[in-house]
Length: 480
Picture 1 (cartoon, helix red, strand yellow):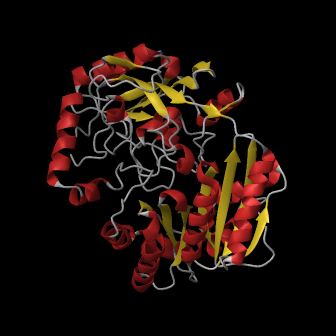
Picture 2 (cartoon, rainbow, N blue to C red):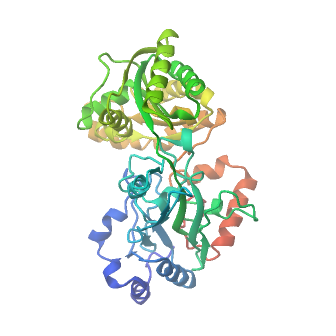
Picture 3 (cartoon, one colour):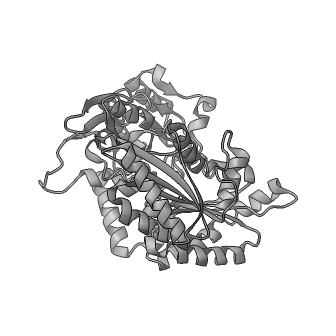
């Protein structure tokens, strides 16, 4: 990397493409764009560009390829693996899609919505609601994350069980290639078997193959009936048994099944304003159950009541509550979605976004807990997540100590060591070290060791074919 960075005259050429009003050069203005949300990665950049159109993105990448200038795409800057963070050294230019935030079209008859890559997820949800449709991707960061980033990381969220992740929620893409060429793949077809599916090349590629500037997204009918319940349980084994009953009873009406530990409830009630424990007594584990039906509210209510009755009769549920209003439904989900943020005031946290076969979740957690506690006595394990699709956020807060601030650095310094312990157990169970957050910088080196040589070689071939100048998000996903 040329640590001297691009020459001023070259920066001026990039700035001229978007106009000086849409450029950040001052380091104080750039600062929020240079650091990953957890503070694990902090890079440097001489400039951030805010294009207002696909054509401007094209001009930026064409110039970047011609001059060998590294480009880091950035949307909401909510990623958790450093994929959106520039490297150190001052060479990488950031291309932000925040100005490209339009909802281009909504077609409730065809159940599709076309949006810019910089459209905020919450705005997409609202545009769908305005025509009585549902865009089901739901994330804790939905008020700031953007569609291009959601697609580039193949985001999952809380409704994967019923609707799938972003790969399943996208019909077509518009992408600017590193050469500046524009691929218009904004097709609205559910069936199109005409050669290679180029769309899938860019979804999950984390901006290493091009910049997603537009997308055709799938919409669904709004549920007529919706109900949410929280159940107190003894163990992950009981949670798995309850999930099996929920799947059999509710079928496709089961839209969410989340598992949470007692320590997670304690963190959220202690640190998140307005969150309270809805059950009168503490329980070792909890299941958050979400049911949506297409016919009536009564059907959803009947389903959740029947499920809880079965759970009580089978000795799986210790206590439970059913939300009696939309506000209570949102409050239960807010408790779950706030769980990761609630760990921040508790000191350092080593996080894992892993997936294992659903049937192996209890055994994985038992083995991981034992190994982590052996390595880090006193560690506070807060493992929660989407039991229905096997995605567990296996997070570990630092042990309590007299000097939490000083001990935080020592704890975080063990990140790689603890990752190796947890990921080794995940891989032995046939799982994945990244379920929905991506690879970025955080898991890049590890990926090179766990994927087969032929898989890594194929990915490198694809990278070279799409990005011959090597300018797109360098240092991410693939080892340089």
